Length: 128
View 1 (cartoon, one colour):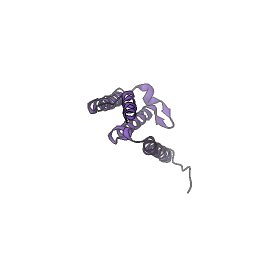
View 2 (view 1 turned 45 degrees about the vertical axis):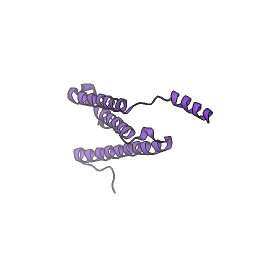
View 3 (view 1 turned 90 degrees about the vertical axis):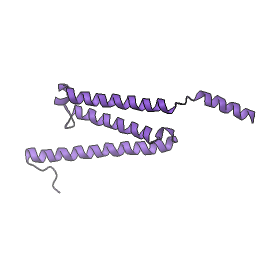
View 4 (view 1 turned 120 degrees about the vertical axis):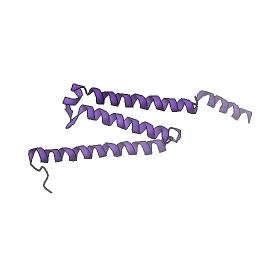
């Protein structure tokens, strides 16, 4: 019995537990930094990012999408307590959402590009 307690104490000694105050400040700092970057890019609007396109979308919009996904991932990770769950459950929940959101963004961009082409050039690519 004493042997089990010693192993448990050694095991606990290797893990650094954070208290709730440290977790809250960490979440606050990370989400604040990401939000400040988003707001700064929205105010400054660098010409390099607003006049260059990648897959028919401005580069600044891609940056906004990526930062939004980072914030959504971290909110899921922290506020839904995914960090404390078993590894398999974390992966199932988080990666399913990441793939779903990525696919949804692809569909919205593809359909938006098609509708833009129809309105601007007056022709239909796909004849259903």
